[in-house]
Length: 336
Ligand SMILES: NC(=O)c1ccc[n+]([C@@H]2O[C@H](COP(=O)([O-])OP(=O)(O)OC[C@H]3O[C@@H](n4cnc5c(N)ncnc54)[C@H](O)[C@@H]3O)[C@@H](O)[C@H]2O)c1
Image (cartoon, rainbow, N blue to C red; front, side, top):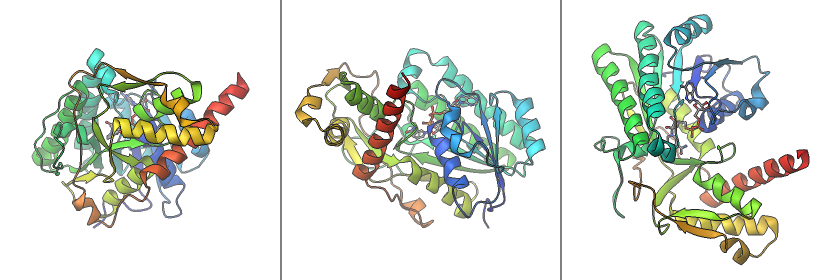
């Protein structure tokens, strides 16, 4: 039996952020989804209403500016909107910020998830989907992949706070029998990402002719998924997944940070019609991040059994992303 149906009312937390807004645009842009999306977002520095400009007047969409820690308000919204499913994206997400100031990460990522689960405990007909990360599993050497049942070994305050939230989700499933599912995604990239994260930083530095910072020697490896493929994967889990189960969402596209920078430089050199040597001279190696995980890689066999797999090649996705940031840059330059 399906967890959602196309007429469900889905409360998306953090829907004005990068991945949440992609999920909302995906559903509201589809012909199959005839239900309603209720976006609850506090609009921190990382949230942007502009990310959902395309859907803001859609009758299938409602927005509430709210903190997920405000349990009473979340409860009211669930009642008022007759929510059937919560898809929980809201989080503090930048690892570097978590190293400098972890408090907000514990508050939003752990306490915020606790408050949402308390709402679901009161209204147990609501299904709860937790958006988690591959980072909760710690890091890997050059070989091997994380499976859904790999042990949790988080290394940063960010990943530890996401791990804490995941443990609460599991406990509420086991203890109270709530209807839950969890997904662990690899690194997402694509349009609308806040320009503090690696790929938009590199693109924007190329556009502004500024130094491109690369941690350590650039050998750390990440698996990269185009954000629209991630949105489809989450929907597939809601459609075809099994209650109480966890699914890895990976693309199989693994690159060192140095390889990512080189690919972006080639794409940007082509777009800007400048020699790639000129952009390569912007590369600057900076001291490594504290506790920097060497490699993440997911075994995504389980979600493939739900007839999903990532469609976008890394180079194709990077090209789309670079062109999107260029348009944004040009629009901004014209306004200025
Ligand atoms: N970006 C990645 O590569 C990646 C990979 C795996 C998992 N994830 C997870 O996916 C989710 C979304 O990530 P993202 O990259 O879109 O993040 P993001 O930082 O772009 O967006 C987070 C959103 O949450 C909102 N938010 C923050 N605190 C809130 C609060 N207390 N109440 C309500 N809203 C709040 C922000 O305003 C913002 O709109 C997160 O849970 C993250 O841990 C991200």
